[in-house]
Image 1 (cartoon, rainbow, N blue to C red):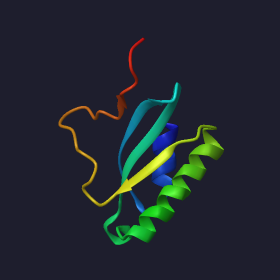
Image 2: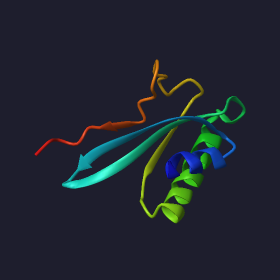
Image 3: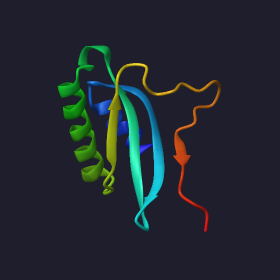
Length: 92
């Protein structure tokens, strides 16, 4: 996906991620949960990586996304086929 391509271009980020879709004040929002590489796990590096990824996604995909960079191992691994999108928006 385009999101995955952008994650892979930020060297400080591991290739593990989950996209969470939520509804906030009648608007849909996208939150990308990814994790830092071990050498970039300190808070300052994680914040810089989150900002870099958010900017890349805005430039290439045209969507504003919040990015949460967790410590190494912070994104749950799935057995079998990876679950990449979690849709928490209410059904209407």
